[in-house]
Image (tube, rainbow, N blue to C red; front, top):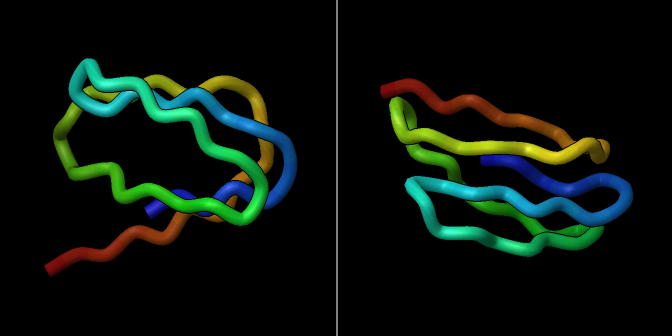
Length: 48
């Protein structure tokens, strides 16, 4: 899970783009391709 702390981000998960702003979050599934542009975020990794 990535939470945007400052700025805006264009995050692509499995080919689908998402535009996120400060305070928003997204779940990025393990082993799925993703691309991140420069911004500040809090990344929380949950393992089961």
